[in-house]
Image (cartoon, rainbow, N blue to C red; front, side, top):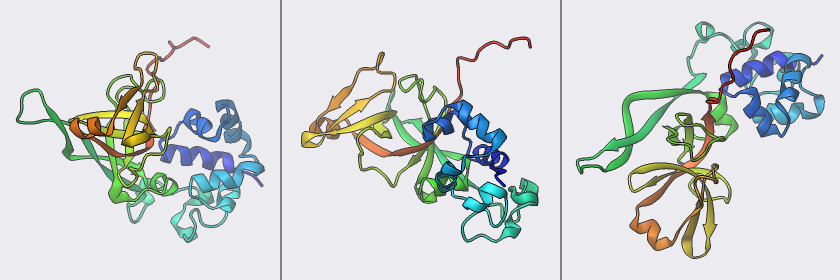
Length: 241
């Protein structure tokens, strides 16, 4: 029996993924995902969703068996759903990510990227496992400005994998540009040059930096962006039923 809808809803909540973001990732409409919540994930897509969320297909479909590959069933609660926080014995379902931001330097008006002391962001372990990110490479930064709107809104938290700095054209990366944090799509160009592209291209035209300019302006790729948490700032007013 396909009773995967409730488990899918819980998994997305654990991953801090909205139905809209998950739908975009799977190239379906949000309405499709809402239907999956109610009726279960279509069997034709069960395996790909299980692989993406790092769970066993059988568990996702029916709640039977271990949730994760190689995991014993007693790690899960009633009906195969994840245990509540109070039921967890090892406290390792969520991982702490250090948070980096622009910090003032001794030079007036200049900043440098640095870690905020005693400040962490918790992210579900399965998010890192699904994206193949090593915990020691995972950091968190906050989006500043609207250059990546409507993809990533101002103030959104962003997960960065410092283990992936090799540029794949069209992927999003976090950069430090002479002490300033930037988030852009990157494209390689001949001679070691880079093209930086904003999602909000209407307001922020492409920027091209030669290899010499990259060195002179202290442009460093921090890592590949594997996760972000976005709120819709253009919230519609509540309506009466």
